[in-house]
Image 1 (cartoon, rainbow, N blue to C red):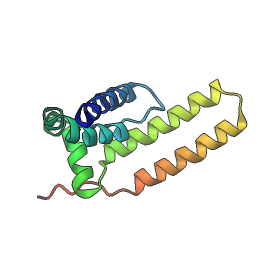
Image 2: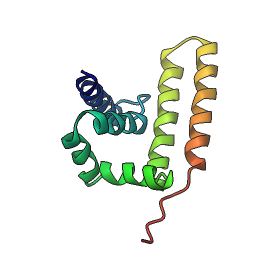
Image 3: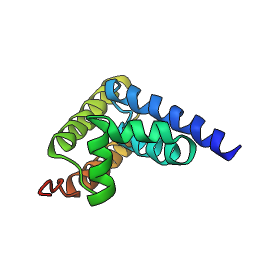
Image 4: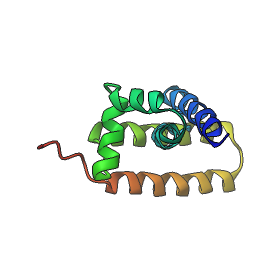
Length: 122
């Protein structure tokens, strides 16, 4: 039963990660990491597919082995955070919400930028 639950959650987080590629404000990488974690417990096949994927696999391996995030991923993430905040600025009329989200986004961007870049020397 635990394996089935892990499999369901793995696919759920995979869907959220894919949606996050196209929807500003919805993070991709955290959902991808959750997908990998649950897939390791629920489906060897899905877990293998994630790590063998030409794009997703490199992100996961860099994070797992080095705690690293590529420069391109950092730039994309920060641009998406900025875009998300600008969209919220025009859609919401709540100063507290805008200030809270700005603080959260700055914390996320700071953490992300502080991560090392992958060392692919060997």
